[in-house]
Length: 84
Image 1 (tube, rainbow, N blue to C red):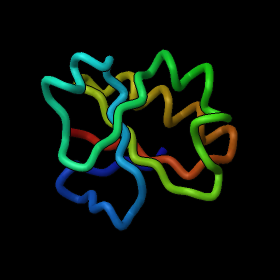
Image 2: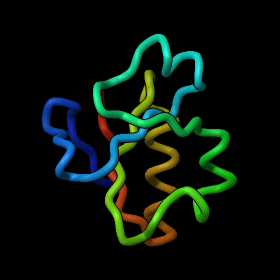
Image 3: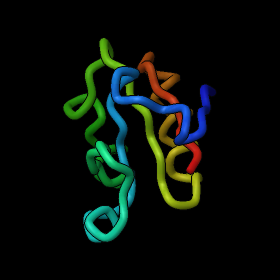
Image 4: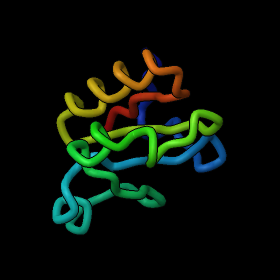
């Protein structure tokens, strides 16, 4: 599983995705991130993501991002966990 620190991320690398719920995202998120809550993504990843693009996932504790990256890697997506 690929993992980087938030300081290593730049927008040219791919899309930064915050996995927290919508309220948590509104209150606090990384600049340039979009919000796709974990529960929405886990059931709709085929509709929401493109296998030809790169995605960088983070969450407040790291467990949701670790899980989603592990799962999406198995399905052939270019994904990386971002540690805050």
